[in-house]
Length: 216
Image 1 (cartoon, rainbow, N blue to C red):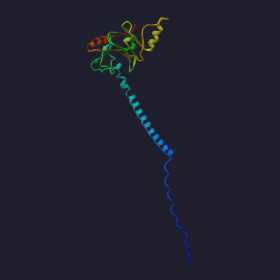
Image 2 (image 1 turned 60 degrees about the vertical axis):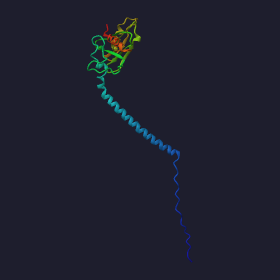
Image 3 (image 1 turned 90 degrees about the vertical axis):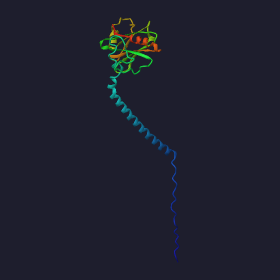
Image 4 (image 1 turned 120 degrees about the vertical axis):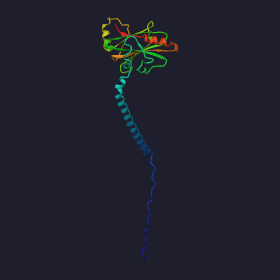
């Protein structure tokens, strides 16, 4: 009697279809990619900022010798502002110069003492600015602050101001306008707006009429 083969072929295990990623997995994957991109961009920004900082530091000595107070240091030493529009031969134009204005400058060195600036106003708008050595505006005033048609102030260092205050009469307030310059050397720029073409000669007269001399 033949043995009956009861063995049955077992079908291969059915492959289960892979389950799609759930939303937490997709969120974490996108979050990781976003953080990686953010880290790369941050590093690139820091690297660029470092390069700009290094270049700026290296250029400071060059920029310090090309500011307006240094370029025009020899002008206005005779007690009156000298015209710089158009600029004198061999000197660059004032960078912020407007085409419809004229400018004149007085250089100063407070090592010799405080500087008194006196400007008479006219029919054209007039403005005065004090530029410190190395760049930057220390003070600005317009003809709207003129008293009886005159703008007047004294430029000095902080030490000179302290000395002047100590010499003031006790109980009395000084009427002079005192401007502290953060540097010993600097520049006073007088700028007059030219409204019409034929106003230029009057504008030049106003600008060069600014007096800059040692204060009493």
